[in-house]
Amino acid sequence: MKETTLNVQGMSCNHCVQAVEGAVNALPGVERALVELKANNVTVQFDEQAISIEQITEAIEEQGYDVKA
Ligand SMILES: [Cu+2]
Image 1 (tube, rainbow, N blue to C red):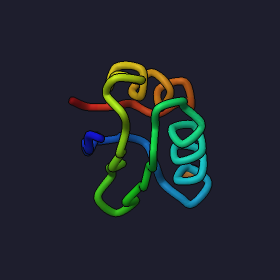
Image 2 (cartoon, rainbow, N blue to C red):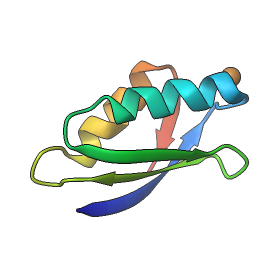
Image 3 (cartoon, rainbow, N blue to C red):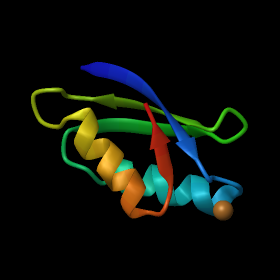
């Protein structure tokens, strides 16, 4: 299991938190996604054999948020 923290731009309220956490948690291979709204980031625990950081980033961007590396 790997853990990474991604910087997410554009999250402003609890709806955004739910959108990002919901989208990432729904991905196969993701164990847990937790947004820290004030820090503009999401910490993701995932199985790197099952999913890549790029796929996680895409899922966040599909919700309308920008991910900074
Ligand atoms: Cu919002």
